Length: 254
Ligand code: TMP
Image (cartoon, rainbow, N blue to C red; front, side):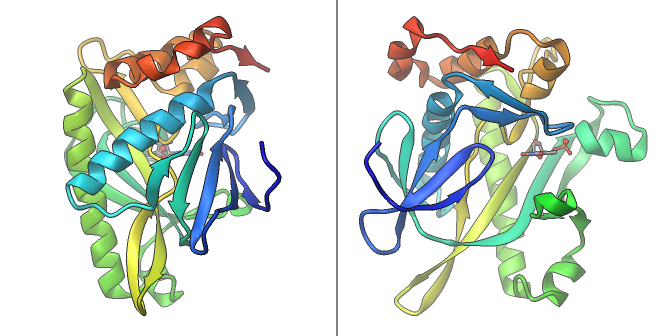
């Protein structure tokens, strides 16, 4: 990797200064944390797959009018992105009861929801990302009312698109998390979909068998994580790009 300025390191990505002002480069790591307890895990090759999947999804979303931070995929592990100011809110959209929703209300996982639920969490790992209300978001001045309306609308459009994309490849989209950022262009502020959309940020179940394809299952069963990432990538048609991985495979390292 060439020498360049690192701006930030998160759980799954490193962000470097980009080649032009207003750009950054995201490097997708193999590091992972399970959805339940945040236990650190390394899955060799995961970053390559997630880079390809997020590239595909963000590109398709921008084609249907959901503006994203993606400029282009640079190589197997890196993307060139518009530099954005990350809005400190995680937006979770739910179609089926699972994960923390099931725990919070003592409901059975797999129960379909009569309508999709949009939830907000404060993006702060030190505080455990607490759930927040629209009132907190606007009272704390994190986003304005019109921006929040736009975020809600973009989140629901993303849900419609992703639900269709995944159901077309035999996968049920249980829920997902997205993050937005602000970008200034000619004195205008734009809200862009940021971060990533990958199996790390979604709960995905097989449509027919309800088999969990998400990383939580593998943190419980300690087996098969490589097959799940490969299976999702293969069903999305991005696995052929990844042939060079076959000699190395995807290994779970603890
Ligand atoms: P949940 O089903 O546990 O409530 O999580 C909802 C979504 O949030 C899930 O699809 C993935 C995402 N998520 C993360 O990206 N990181 C996390 O640490 C957690 C807990 C959830």
